[in-house]
Length: 370
Ligand SMILES: Cc1ncc(COP(=O)(O)O)c(C=O)c1O
Image 1 (cartoon, protein in one colour):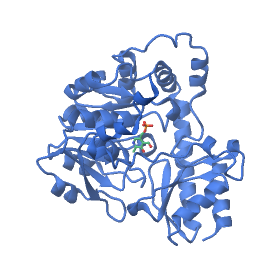
Image 2 (cartoon, protein in one colour):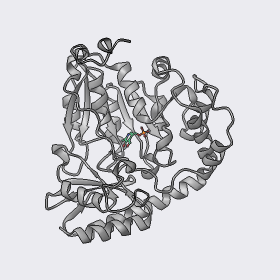
Image 3 (cartoon, rainbow, N blue to C red):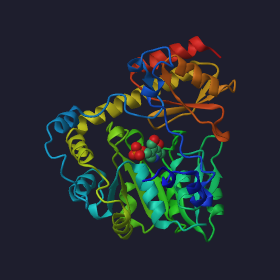
Image 4 (tube, rainbow, N blue to C red):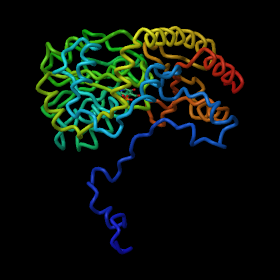
């Protein structure tokens, strides 16, 4: 192709959809390898508490099975039959209700692509996980923000009041990221009773034990998302799933990209489910460590941790210098999450690590001081 006709010449920008010109994108957690030489410890000693990953990794069965697999050259089953059957056994809901994706964030995107016409509204209970906003905008929809209260509880009356004729979905993360707070089942059902589609994101269900998944077959408008990223330690392999009314599951299967879950992810799910006792012991250890971390953070006079039922803790930095604290920890090799947005300006979010990670974090917080 001659130099002048390359498709990435600036003229192309004129063709970008106007509503996407100011699109800022999603600000993801830092990859440690990008910090090589920029922090005071070697990359392999960085303590990563910024993306709610599982500090114990995946089941060793997954590593062994992937090392021995001989058919990576063959496409996976596009209909996800085996995968959906396995997930049905785990979730307690029939396979006809289930669709898997490469990460539950791809399912958020898929649901919104299915339902949102330009100008349609999605109710987002902020502060919350950024992908509901991200994908709504990508679909040309309008995000209607309903603020959580001071304790990060969803204001159900305010959500109901925000419903209009254009409301297509209400997004509810439970437990919520970044606050770690769950939404009571009766509150979720009060919103389901409005008849508006409700998307309940249970990415952290295994840490909270609270779910509405088994109610999915009873309702026409309840959808539940889950992931293997957190409890099963498979974030890098990208596998999540959703539970939907069967008619919606059918449509989602039709509009998904072919072969959207790769064979490595399928093997990993299968092996994780065979090793469920091992993985659930790890989940229990993380929950115990979460409660210890909460106590330790409470002892730091200038921090106010928010009680969490997930595998992370949101923490208010009372001197208002959350950004500086985030940088100070990063420079010393500890990554936590800081959200550069008005509702979370004074907060950091800390994932629960191993006990030695908690100890290193608390020591470093004391070193940095208020
Ligand atoms: C509430 C919530 N939903 C979904 C996801 C996405 O998880 P996955 O890795 O399955 O895409 C996350 C990840 O942090 C999350 O916090």
